[in-house]
Amino acid sequence: MVKRKSHKGNYCPSARSLDVIGDWWSLLIVRDAFDGLTRFGEFQKSLGIAKNILASRLRTLTERGILEAVPADGGARQEYRLTPMGRDLFPVMVALRQFGERHLFAPGEKHSRLVERATGKDVRIGIHTEDGRPIGPDEALIIKIADTDSP
Amino acid sequence: MVKRKSHKGNYCPSARSLDVIGDWWSLLIVRDAFDGLTRFGEFQKSLGIAKNILASRLRTLTERGILEAVPADGGARQEYRLTPMGRDLFPVMVALRQFGERHLFAPGEKHSRLVERATGKDVRIGIHTEDGRPIGPDEALIIKIADTDSP
DNA sequence: ATCAATTGGTTTTAACATGAAACCAAACTT
DNA sequence: AAGTTTGGTTTCATGTTAAAACCAATTGAT
Image (cartoon, rainbow over all chains, first blue to last red; front, side):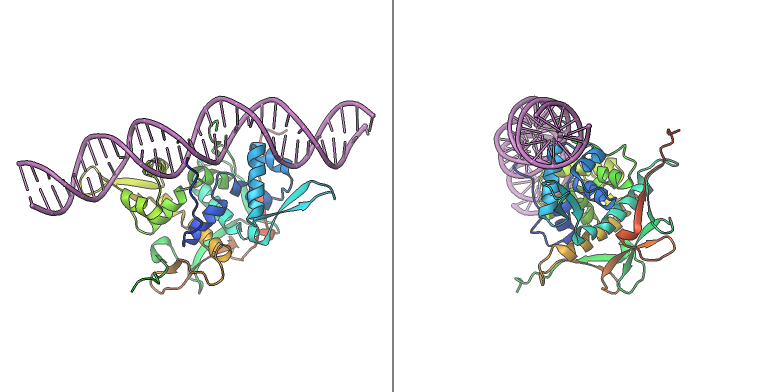
């Protein structure tokens, strides 16, 4: 491929996010981390991912501050835990989940659910303005950064 | 690569979503579509993506119901527009954007913004229970589907 | 109408990433 | 102490990507 492109320099925050977690496996690893998995073997079993790919992903997620590797059992083995930055991916997970639930399951087909621990109630996502009014895609607008080099 | 794995059969809705839009380019194409781009050349210029890859992505996004291709100018050329299903990816875009804004820009570094068209106010995302209470990752829990084949 | 340029792709090619399996060292079990 | 489990790394075949060349159909200029 002549090296996969990066979106790092992009001034769109979504693009930069995809640069960090936009590959085939990273967000699934993060999802499992939200679900409490911490060990190499747990992720590998849960995802059915090749071990070399998993090792590579855990390494880059750690380098990028999404996960942190803490020594386990006082030995050489690691436990991988979400950092505060990693936990800030929660809305991304919920948004993906909600989209999938709505469009990617046959009617009546079962799927896992994300619920409030205390009450068992479904978790939802909402888009709104900073003063709290709900807003849809058609009322929103992307403002690109001003080109400060213009006359 | 012995063919990239698919998450299609997975019972996690997030995994299925990633199966549909989880590659390196699809969500950026969707972002540009939200921003009003419709033509092959517009996407190509905006993203700097190779033309063959773009053609391939537009095809699969269309096959999967995220985009629809409508003939433009009454000729053979196409316009690519978001379907209602595609517009339901809006929360995903907003969530990615919010994460990127928070963690992937240096202090003071400029980035594009997503605002309400009418007021110019920032668009935010919120996670809450079905009865409206805000909720964080630690109060949430994934419930896996019951294994109906168990005794 | 004719010729040139633009648009919207497809094909080809080289580099690179992925997945599977084999391999290996350290830690844990017995 | 020997075997097993855990947590990887290495090797290899194949898939996927990026870039560039190519091409047909419109569109624009003369």
